[in-house]
Length: 338
Image 1 (cartoon, rainbow, N blue to C red):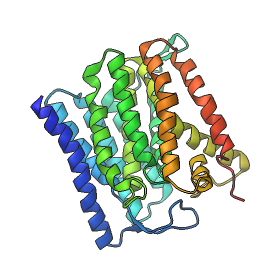
Image 2 (cartoon, helix red, strand yellow):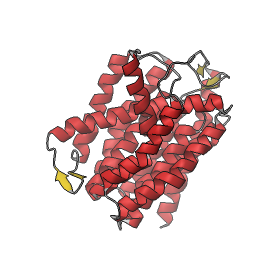
Image 3 (tube, rainbow, N blue to C red):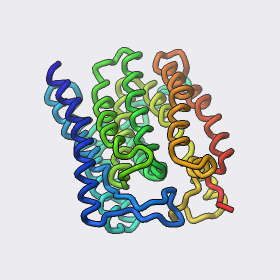
Image 4 (spheres, rainbow, N blue to C red):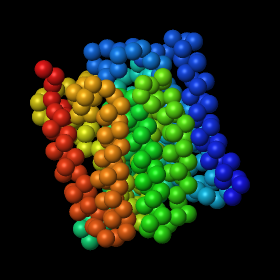
């Protein structure tokens, strides 16, 4: 138990200290995110701090694996896939990388991670078990690539992506607990602690951004943790999808609306619902706290009912998502400013 406390402390303190060092390095080397017409922030801010999350989590998770508290396949998938996404994201943070090469590397990382964890578990849909076999690798890779990219899209205001990751991880740990699989809680908890160390520097007003390196790492890592949960209990995958509902719905609605409007979806913009809301309410903090409130009051109870088996996963997802879709459209997700 003493070793566990040290590992948990390392995850938190490592990210806290690592982010401070990265901030100093960014300031010294002029690695600054300069606001433009597509930005949601107004002041030049150092970026790339999310690397501290990746390094702190991977090192802590390796120690967890040595003590038998996390599966080697899971940490291997995250270290390889998450590491690859972090590197390409860091290159894009500091020197623009063409979108086609980023996307190619995202798929390579996603497929590699799927192979290491054994692919996609059978999915329970309205009482039926669907084993997608080799097609699961195709479906799973698109799921991971979409999740890591939408996490990048949603990392646009101070503290939002960090708070979402902490909530999803602690919520995922709770789902393991209530479903009788407490031995799997430590991976999500350690990731939550690593993100909390970064959040100290990223809470509104942010003193450093996580950058593509950090948001991409979080996106694919949360995706892999959700796929691990599916192998433990198929209902838990639905639970994770519900926990991540705000990000999934906002990003997906924004993409669909922009496609319908004929916009160039690969171009940077600030047309997400949360970005419109932050401008309407005059700051980042009200929206970051509001999303956290929605997560706790609305999404967590539904996900818990699904994990307990009291609510079918697909039904729970529909109940959770419909109000979120209406809310996203209410805040003009995907519509042009004007």
